[in-house]
Amino acid sequence: MKQNQEPQLKGTLAAVLVLAVILAASWTAVFVLFINR
Image (cartoon, rainbow, N blue to C red; front, side, top):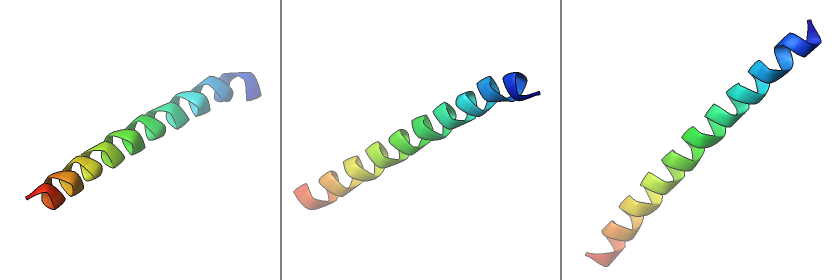
């Protein structure tokens, strides 16, 4: 059971990290554009 669940957990963690990076990047871009106006 444990060996089957581990890759899934790592995949979920990777997906969450990618989403977090995309969200952070988009917020940073909006913030920079807002300040530069």
